Length: 243
Image (cartoon, rainbow, N blue to C red; front, top):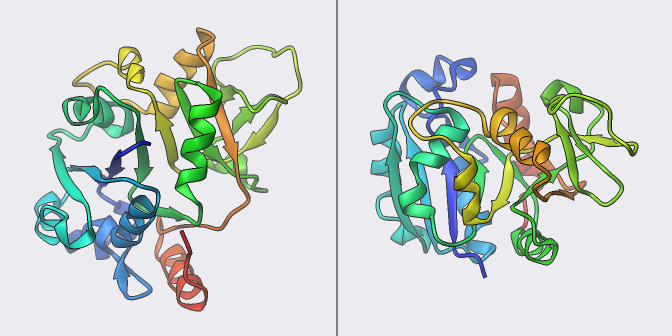
């Protein structure tokens, strides 16, 4: 069983301004509740007990809202960043709170309707260093193409590593949910900002380390723009996500 997870919640959410000038993006209400609370529901339903939330922009507001996590049935810890470290640097900064056992990482500005326990079981069965949840999407390239071979092994991410591959690849988008073994930290630099998708994952793939994709067609919402927020609110009110 995996009991630890990290929520990436440090971003400024500039595309949602002026809302995010005073409300951190993960606390923006969706269907009557902060998006972050929906994310915590997903994690708790998946067997997660301890959650690390990284903080930067209006981080004190998130910390005050969540507290120690007890009212959500979780233990919540915080990893502060100054300056902001992007996804890779932020995860590496949280190593003291996450290291030593497998863990889940999820974006704090989107939500996927998925059984996390199924993803975790898939990860354990494949035995990879990392598992990325991926979705088919006609606009996958716009989000950054994640390419898998016939065995669902990740072979290329956003065009990296470059070069030809021996087998045909299928392209997907990444909705911001992955599972890692603690050995992932051996591939990550500390105290500098970088993207885990654009830097760490291509290093793993180029070195032949096993990285797998968990393919799902389940519903996904993101709140990266005011229009996307309005759509997400409508969709969740009409048909709440089930985890």
